[in-house]
Image 1 (cartoon, helix red, strand yellow):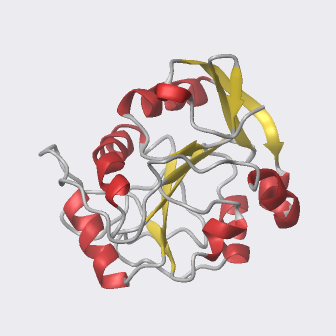
Image 2 (image 1 turned 30 degrees about the vertical axis):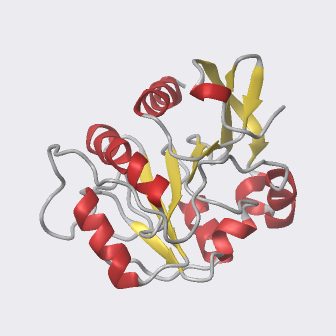
Length: 220
């Protein structure tokens, strides 16, 4: 098994359930050990990189109300609230979200590659946000800058605020953006392409990849 994003963002043959199973939520040390093997692709961003903004598209609500697929005690209902989370609190949230598929995206307002993928995440959330829970993890950022980014990118879903990057490092990542997928049972799923299996999408996710993974995830 491989942890890298598919070379050339190849065509997916299917998602694979149970690669990391529920230990991703319940056993932080084991999850971190597994994910530490994931290599960081060149498109992961460095602080201060810049990219053009997203293309015009239908947007989220102008108010702060978040588009959520479910309700949970720790799930923000205001997309601009950005409550501060550490790794333990985030794992608790993932446990509370069992019952619906979940997409986790690790991002920052200063991250150029995050801007590249932002329109795809926005569009996917508007299409699937009542069936799939999208949740962002804003790392090593200023809350005001992150709120501006959410507004500019028209993200309808909520994010949590991780100023120290504890969630990112605890999950075994060292660059962003990164996108993880969880099934209804709370298990992190992998996906296959080119004869290899991958645990997470590292670097800016493409519209085609996101659509393919979500379609297959919802079919399970």
